Length: 247
Length: 233
Image (cartoon, rainbow over all chains, first blue to last red; front, side, top):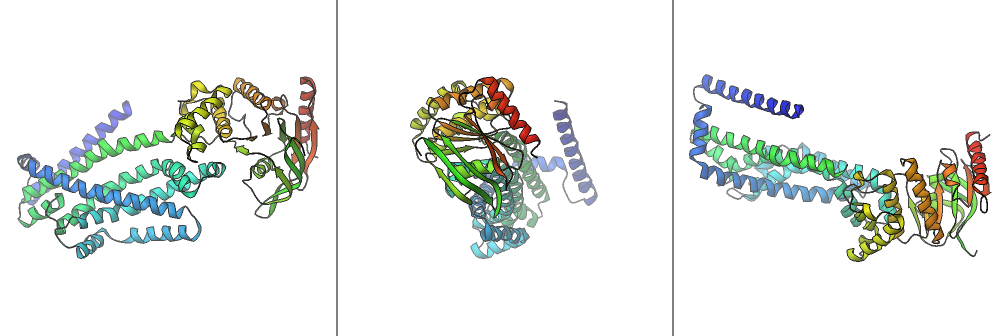
């Protein structure tokens, strides 16, 4: 209880520091709006904020799901061991080395502007290496703990994947998923900014170009709020649940 | 040989080309308990795995008649499944309908006194109950020969006695058991034979026949084996 209270207090202080920095930047720059005008701008345009939030969340979650499916498939391939495992691990390092900006521009070139595919693909490309690393680690631990059970039960590779490797890796997948979803959300807005017709990233870029700094700061606040809420309300609880899964 | 479920002759088990257990010459009769005793590194677990077919790099002769199931030292129950779901896992992965698998698991669980614990998760079950669940999982696989590796580890004294009684009951039903344990006094209560296994190249150095002995006779044999293991010279 004491620890929980200390955690909440720490969070409130951090929010205070964040708002103080904002206030200082606003006072010194003379251009950036303060906290109150930005919040009232957001409240005054709640319908647009809501629709942008839905678009950004859809893009991020679609990209995340794609990355998760790909990670599970590649982790299973890597579990075959030998040369295939080396290839998958090296591929992960290569993907990890590509900048998010390169992904964003690359997918814009491939899919063109106004499509939602660049934002989804960038979210997937960003989440993928984080998820794959977590899944590979999970499979490795599951193998060392339950590999003998697979042999005793005479499981096929697919049977082992479905009954042991994937479920035993849930805590690792959820823990890496927390970071991956955060990264995907932060980066998918970059792709939205460059070429989309909706979403938080699109609106941020639009307000910037229109020199509407109140709108810009309001949507920046929206993005931060969305990430914090997603992390605290969904991901943190999911991670706590997943830890119990393996007790 | 009639009534013999395991027959090993000059059996040497290798791992990566290095002998890890044996040479061993012994038989296991149907409905009997053979205890394998020996110091750490003697190859007791390796021998069990060879009988189970989990280690195939063997020299000499090994004939196994029936279905051997190896139950490792750590019970390997999946923490995200209830005891019931753990027990039926070998059946469901082979496509047995859940209803049929549950019926089989319930029959076995009744035999082992597990029925009231089936809905528990492993983390909520005692060490003895977890052991029983691991045995039940082996039994639903249609085991004729149970290969138990240190089944009393992490189990309290009362539960150990209950486990021994349970194993004695299974043997009466015709099951054969090969048991690796350091708890020789307890195991001697149900053992028909005790094999003393030393690290290769010594292998099985002694085989004691306990059938027909009373409890004090069995304890004397256990005592002798313990002294052989603690001072192998």
